[in-house]
Image (cartoon, rainbow, N blue to C red; front, side):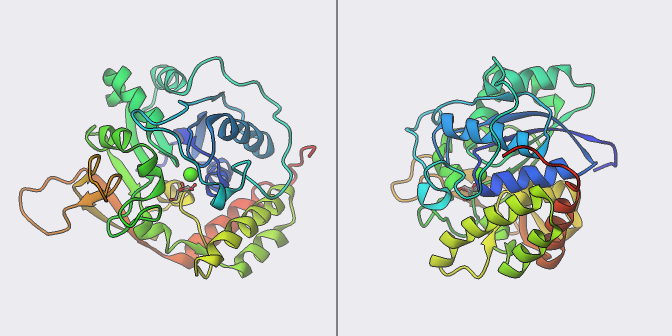
Length: 317
Ligand code: BDR
Ligand code: CA
């Protein structure tokens, strides 16, 4: 990856870890955020869209925000209030949206941004892949203008919503199948790495001590997110979604293996599983750079440093 500014579309279902991923993206000088799009997942599409607008207002993301599709390509919506609360982003108070929603739906806005961009665009997907798959289906000719897709989803050895499936892939396995077959360069931050990308309560304190408004809200998001995960035995908050941004900034922080990953769309017990051939057989052509491990301390430092970038920014809450 070269050092030019990377044009980015942020597509997610915010969500605490989505919000922190976007905080990390906006803090970096390496990215130019061209659009933000919501997808249903952690909550209904109305709620994740509202959360997206409020996060953009808090962080100062000055890009069009479009509402995504209300459910998976072939599946009914289901949400995750146990993890993210009834609003999809419970915890600290957030500002009212300071911007209007785009009149375009998410796949249309994505297509417009990609068409209008002189540089190839990177998509960061931190929810179900519904919008991305709808984009690729409607505009296959735009594939060559997509530099890469960095996604949080799946897990090569286990799931978190079922024994086999991770939440984002399970919400829309058919969409994931389209994306993994697309031929576009994929970075997959699955549970293999994201459950190692833990922030501990002492990290929350360091972030809070940064002292600006975004840092305090981020620390509150982490407190909320950790409360649920602690009941499952986690020693910290697993920052799933920020891994999909961090790998674009610091690939050297991660152990990355190239595998051929397929999406189970039919299994009685395994719908939504990401099945990788991890044997070293000749002739297997990889379709994804799979993140397998992370230098946790450097990752935590990256999040703390990102919070510092918001010094001097305050909005009315
Ligand atoms: C994924 O599910 C969502 O609840 C999180 O935001 C993350 O994208 C982790 O399985
Ligand atoms: Ca998410």
